[in-house]
Length: 99
Image 1 (cartoon, rainbow, N blue to C red):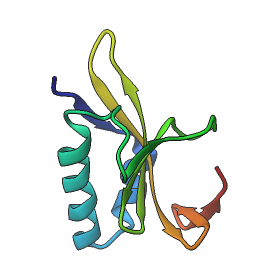
Image 2: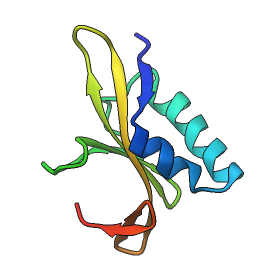
Image 3: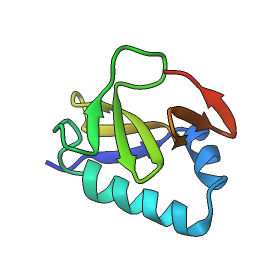
């Protein structure tokens, strides 16, 4: 089963702030790791505690992709935010964010 990938306007703006290499790394990880089994828990992919951002997190080095998954009526992975984790702090769009 293949899922469509859709980036929110916020996620696209956040992605645009990264270097070209970081953008390519994140987009490749999204395509490889979320296209077929976005709801399978792995070492770099986990469900999050309830929050206002998203239900799942994908780790790509120090970068983080936050997403939700829709099964019905269409199979879509909704990318809600893309940020950077430094230590125990998460930055989205250059601003610190708490989950």
